[in-house]
Length: 249
Ligand SMILES: NC(=O)c1ccc[n+]([C@@H]2O[C@H](COP(=O)([O-])OP(=O)(O)OC[C@H]3O[C@@H](n4cnc5c(N)ncnc54)[C@H](OP(=O)(O)O)[C@@H]3O)[C@@H](O)[C@H]2O)c1
Image 1 (cartoon, rainbow, N blue to C red):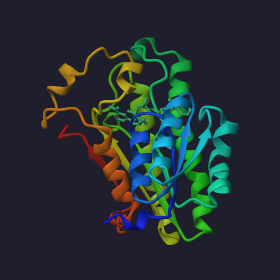
Image 2: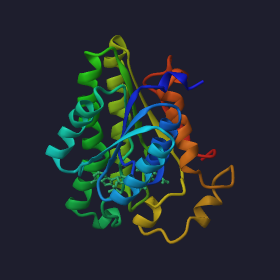
Image 3: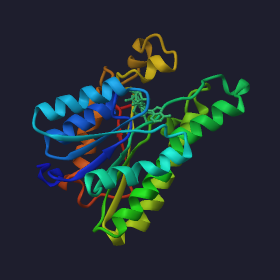
Image 4: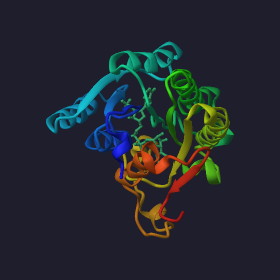
């Protein structure tokens, strides 16, 4: 199992922290050549690269602010050039850019969140799709959120809307990609214990975790394992789907 990922070139966005860092290590542990994309987390990205290299794996570092259209459009071509190709893209980078109540929602928070969580994943996927069409196919996996299922909170309405958009994009690209062997899926994490929550000002997850049927927050590895499954032979007959990793939420 997971043998098909060996030797594959996999670009993972937001891999200097949280779930992306975990995916990069897990994919590399199974023989993938990993692109560790980061923006601010240079130290984290270097640490992940170091851990992979220590185990004899291959990892390429790429910095880009995905809210900068130019940097975003160059990311996949840069990886493809450095690695010699791309078979897997994981659109993992994301987050909430300002979280006022929707009654107070300013245009900037809305636009920045849509830019990071919907516009960037679409343009990255399109870029990878173009390459994969001419090179025997590939896998595109986008990290959505349980916020797409229920709608975001009153303070994350823009984030929920962006993630729901990513799921719609996933379905269109999956239909268009099937004939080329490009398989496109999305993953909906529930509450996962990463820095994401601190960044949106949540002091504690305790009350929220009480609502999760399995009684705990997820871990980055819970999500990374599903991504590995989808990127390897586990995902050979799966496209256009959205999978929850939510502990029953
Ligand atoms: N944690 C959860 O409960 C949860 C639940 C559902 C979905 N998600 C989604 O899961 C994904 C990973 O989040 P996480 O929980 O692992 O949190 P995280 O550690 O905060 O990871 C977010 C990543 O996004 C990257 N990023 C943010 N702004 C960026 C920008 N302008 N340009 C490029 N990269 C940028 C960050 O890179 P730098 O640090 O290098 O800037 C960071 O590595 C996100 O898409 C998030 O929306 C998380």
